[in-house]
Length: 316
Image 1 (tube, rainbow, N blue to C red):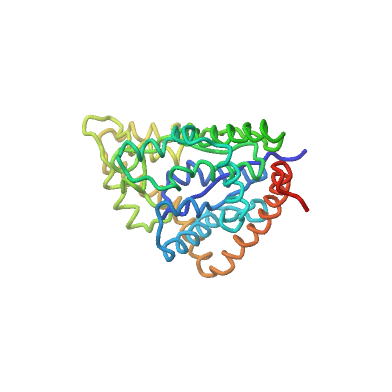
Image 2: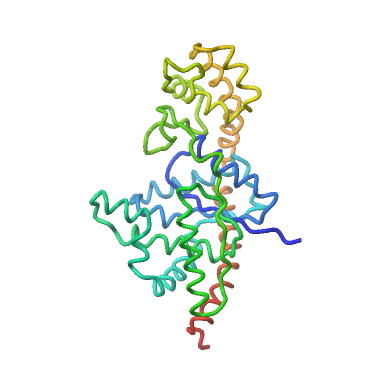
């Protein structure tokens, strides 16, 4: 039986943290056994915030090393970058011609920027169409996302339906796969773990970095079980193991943090060492990305031939 197709977009936006791992990276690696997986580095999307070619190249390389280190298997996953497949931007333009401005003005990113009185670039306004192209080119069945990304899948589905209605059945409608159990992983300050808040525990942190981050986790002196420490620890051990320990150490926050440091080091150290090994041969790691781009190009090219035929530009 043919496997279902899953697609994940990865933005090259800096060092990953443990919430990134549990909410997305691990899910993608786990899916490679059950699904045909496309994992694309969305470097053109990252241009909305990255204007330095040096940083962009470093970030793309880092993403490749990060995902190889956590267990992505290029024999099972088509791992590539968006900019290697020109069909993404071509299809985006075609979608632009059937999408109205009022429709795109409903997008969360546009409304957020508007609310903050920001000067809004065309990329910020239009990026849902590029994202729709990223998705629909590969006919995925599911897109693993957090609740805050659900609108992007709805826009992709709306766009597919509008194209199909206008030009004939062409695109499959994907389903959002909402990862509710990892919707909110707290950072060291109690807010959602996020690079923008500076409250993260880096996924490939050295021991000293882990210790510093964990010891800074905010605790409430009125709590029997420090909820932020426990929530992070629960990523590594089941509640059946953790709760008896935490109950036996009620109020002993330093001891509980030290135990979390120990468990994080056990978890992170093997990943950290694997990444260092891959970093010794960056050309080979990037060759994996290039080969993935060639595989993705074949799929995207075939779909675009169908699209060009449907819209009537194929005349030869």
